[in-house]
Image: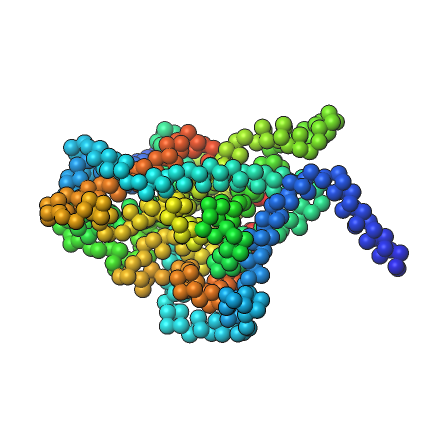
Length: 313
Length: 306
């Protein structure tokens, strides 16, 4: 008994030593990377304990007093808790309903374009907005939607509609956020579907054409089922980041007038953390968000595995 | 029988033709929707500010003028930001690439023992992180806060990009090459430098550009970690210029101004916003047509599972 354990230990240690001697260059290469991950990713995880502490700079993370779940209770009973959750989920659901299917439809339509030249042009132009920074996008939105001089209101004026100060109206915020996101991302998001569609067996299409199927029928009965694995994979990923509404765009578009709609968890974490310096509370809110995200990702993965046999891991 | 086949064929081609026409119309519309806002910014930046203000510039520039760009030349802070951003993009992307290869290559080798454990540890950080404040405290504790390196070091690797490179190493570099190189007496470092990296130019170009664009467009990192005006990147200055309604130019001109002068200045300021967008986006949009096929390839490589 003791001999087998000793042998096992010995063999593992020996294996590591042998591997190290043989691959020492690989170990050397990955050393800075491991150091990077330890310092900038795992060390902050140690700081998560702030969520359960009353942080005082003088005492440091370790020395500060434990307060248990006080920060979480404060968040759950905060006056804007419900609003934050609803905004975050609302924007996410809106994005999911609009932003998820549109690139798929776009890819399908592109796939049936007869003119290769038009296809290439549309593709190339559609990717361009992806490379524009969020700051510029938000700047353009602000200029375009200016109530006096914005082009959108000029156009509204041409057809006799009143000018609207879109960015000052909370009810417009979600639509502005989601549709500008569609404009920016639909081309780029469609790439992965286009490449999946290129892999669809053409013999199936030939058989369908022989049977007299129209293009729309071929789309629904051949293309969609063929790219289902890709769709499911991306759906899981999107569901997993439901609570991760991008900080930058909300932060840049928010102002004192639309703030009731333009506050999400990530902007709140920033506000209480770096503006109000309420470190413990901010960490707690962030942790709450991360945990829900991980749970959503695992849940979506499990659900997809059960219903369609596809899964991320 | 023949007749029925003919009818079927006719029907099919008929609905398909309608589909084709509608499809082309949709695509042309989309083309306009994608391109017009960018086109508008371009023509507005080279048109007479008063015409842009009045909403007369829609499809073609009016009264061509470069006054906005001339004003911009004197606008020093933008150029400070521009210089900083070039530094962050060049140095940052270089460090990103070195770290990414140093991570992806060992993890692509099946005979590297800790491969699975490390991969798991690195991928875990994609889904779970300490969050804003713990990250901030670490950056502050290692002394990077409010230095140039805060823009570069905390984001030294993107796990996603690393996975793209790794899957390229695994799937596109034949394993026999390594055996041949070993027989020829090359060690791992020589093999990586002389064989693997030259063969990986396409994927390195794609990933390098991903990183470069990310640095160019980065606003968040500076918001959190940089306070010193002299270190701020272009996007921070852009935000101040684009998102604030107040007159930025009037401060530079002086206080004694007539109403007409203020009005002219307001109009110029709007045009200035368009020109600054162009100046900021031009580097990225210029290289973009040449590399877009690589980008597409990169997305496809990245979509390979495992």
